View 1 (cartoon, rainbow, N blue to C red):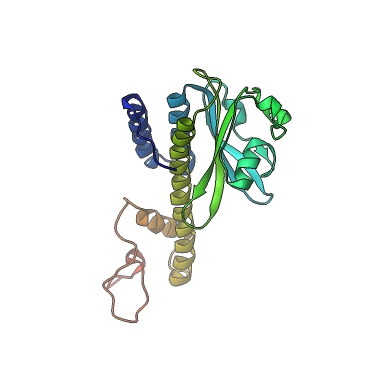
View 2: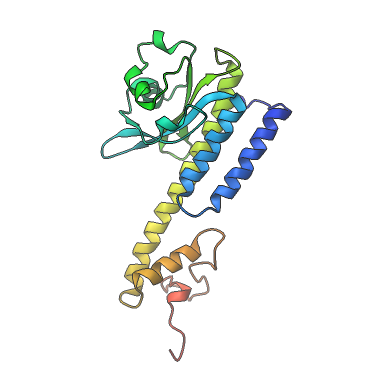
Amino acid sequence: MTTPTPDPAELQVLRAAARRASIARRLQGDPETALLQSIVDATVTLFDAEAASIAIFERDPDRLEFRVAAGEQGAGAIGLSVPPSKGIAGFVFSTGQPLALSDVTSDPRFDRKTAERTGYVPRSIAAVPLVEQHGRGTVGVLQLLDKRSSPTFSLRDMELLGVFAAQAAAAIHATRVQRDLDELLHQALGRLAGDELDAAAIEAIVSAARPGRGEPLLDARRSPGSPAVPRRARARPGR
């Protein structure tokens, strides 16, 4: 699939989305949710749709969990969980194939009961998979409900929706890599420091090591063969 060339109005929306994503990275709280929210906000604005949402695959039990939504009819989806093979979202997630329907009621894959739980039953749906490019496969689904300007979704619509889906997948990958790294650093520091550092001190060192914060965590200026010791955990002479 070729990447579409946005027109000036689309570029303005995309630039605004990029600015919101940049701000979201600096927000306190859950950066993944903030980034995904900026993507659905931009999606619903660009397409002038009733709603847009992102469902993320979670385990124990396996499910698609609607993490963020935007648009006048989007709020009811947030927090909703569905089986990963049920409904339109489940079909797109399990097959990895995008799907556009102009009349959902005529398609047997449409799960009306789940739609009713959100408080809004759409006329049309476009959905694309969030495919991570680093080996984890499909990690979720981006859905768009009811464009106000047209009863159907064009090929260009699906291409542009795929651009937003790729950004969402990249955001999920980046934040999960950071969480995995944080967990690894917590474990490593706990082993290295023993009783010399409490939990708060370890958390402070890990926070300083995150991109854009503080100094590098590990001191590269060490003798060959010696273990990598956190700078702030290393005792100073005379102390």
